Length: 282
Image 1: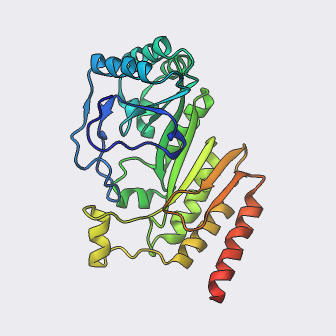
Image 2 (image 1 turned 120 degrees about the horizontal axis):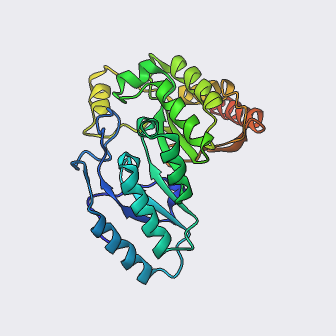
């Protein structure tokens, strides 16, 4: 297998075969993200990817899941994606699911017919970095998408039978936009109907614009207590109408939550409250 640069994948793809079909991220301008700064976006030739798949077939007797890296492989044309998915089906007939990172805008650019054909060819899940439900926060971090676009992209994927796993970043609004970020994020979680939601906590990375803003005092990060208060607000405003698996179990989270909304909402809120009370007594 050949890889260019550092490879990233969602935590739930830890046991998947990682196949790099694109290099880098088409946007690569978010102020908080250091992941693809050392890469210039380009598409790997199909023949190279095919060689990697055939090599992996020799190395692994069984592959249940495959993840197409890098940053947003759904930017590829539907024809190119179908060629890749058909190759996976031919070489790994036992593979039950292929996953990709995607920007919501790339979902919205494809027709219903295209998305259905991708689903039928094996695309089972898209991972979307929503980051925030607040348009002001998204604008400040240079996300390049609106909250409405992200919500619509998630809803469209789910409606057409492709699961969406959506991540948000606690603390992304800083002290100034803490409440707006929390309330709008909770509302988006409730409205968009994603199968999975993951919550990370902001970890400023050296070399990013966000890190520079923190060092200069332009951006004021949240304290641990404020992160907990924000988390309580997010959950309080997350009125999901369908089951949504919720996790805050990333390495960046100091409070681990795991449950399904809406049925575990009250339990998880109480877990946050107990943690806040415990920390307040220290």
